[in-house]
Image 1 (cartoon, rainbow, N blue to C red):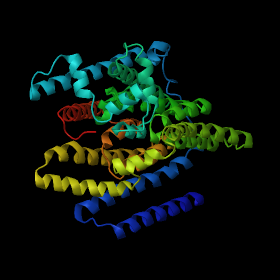
Image 2 (spheres, rainbow, N blue to C red):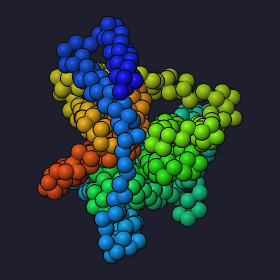
Image 3 (cartoon, rainbow, N blue to C red):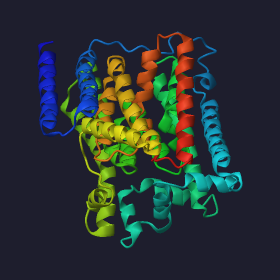
Image 4 (cartoon, one colour):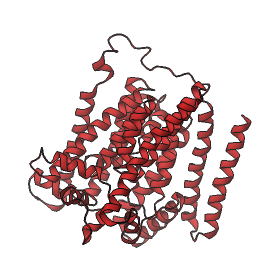
Length: 454
C-alpha cells in the first residue's frame, strides 16, 4: 500500500510538471486552454486509476463466465456464434454502402451503378496510396514517392487477393477489408467472452462495430486489418500464449506505426500474470522478453523497407514532417488547437471544417477519455494501459486529422463502454447502441459528401 502511494505521488508530480511546463510556454487562452486542461485532467486521472487496478490483481479471483451456463448453452454453436456475427457485420457494411450511395445520389444526382459508385465514393483520402503500393510497390520519384509513409502489409494483402478478383485492386482491397471486418467482430466477441457473459460479449461486439469511425472498417484502408491483428494479439496474450501474441503484434506493427504499442499491452498482461501467481523465475522472464521483442520485428521490417527503397531507414519521418506537417506532440495541445480552430471555423461560417473535422475530433477524443476514466477500475489493467499509450500517441500528433478513425481501432473503448453499462437497464443498452448507430450513419454521410473526414 505504501509503495502504491509512492507510485501515485510520483506519477502525479510528473504529469503536473509536464502540463505546467507546456502551459507556461503556450499561447492559448479561454476555451482553448480550458480544453487542454480538461483533456490533461481526464487522462491523468485515468493513469492514477490504473495503478490500483494493477495492485488489485494479486487479490482477484478470475471467474469463468461459462460457469453458470447449462449444457444447451455450452454447445459450441451457441458459445461461438461466429457465422451469425460475421453475417451481421457484413450486413452492416452493406447497409453503409447503400446509405452512402443513396446520400450521394440525393445530393449530386445519379452517378452510375452501385458497383461503379463504390470506387467513386470510397476510393479517396489514403486509399489510392495503398492501391498504388499494391500495384507498383514503393518508388522514389514523383508524388508516389511519398507512399513510403504508408506501411506495407495491407498493400501486400491487396496484391495477394487480387488473384481472386482478376487483378482488380480496388475489389481486392474491399474484399480484404470486409473479410477482416468480419474477423474483427468475431475476435472482439471472443476476447470479451473471456471475462463477460455471452450476451454482454455480443454487446461489446456491437459497440465496437458501431463506433463512428468504424465506417472505415469497410473502406479500402488499413483499419480492419490492423484491428484484426490487434485483437488477435490481445486474445493470445490474454490466454498467455505470448509467442503467438508476439507474432500477431509484429504483423500489426508492419501494418501501422502504432502497432508497436501492442508490446506494451503484452508486457502489462505478463505483469498481471506474474503478480497473479508470484512466480518470478528468470527463465520465465527471459522468455517473456523474447516474445516482446517479436513485436519490434514488425517495426524493424518497415524500417528495412525504407532503407532498401530510399537508402535511409527514417525517410518516412522526413516526408511526414515536410509533406504532411506531422510529428509527435502532446495530446492536450491537440485539444487546445482543435478548440481554437473550431471556434474560428464557426465564427467564419466554415461549417464544413467545423462539422467534418474539428468537432468530431474533439467529441471522440473527450468521449474516449470520458469512457475510460470510470472504466479503468473495471477493465483488465492491460487494456487501460494500452489505451493510454495509444491515445497519447495517436491523438498527440502535431496535426490530428481523424480521431474517430484512429479511436475506432482502439478496442479497449468498446470494452470500457460495455463495462460502464454492465449493470444498467437493458433500455439504456439499446439507447447507447442506437446513438452510436446514428453517429456512424452521420459520419459516413459526411465522408461521402466531401466533408473533411479523413
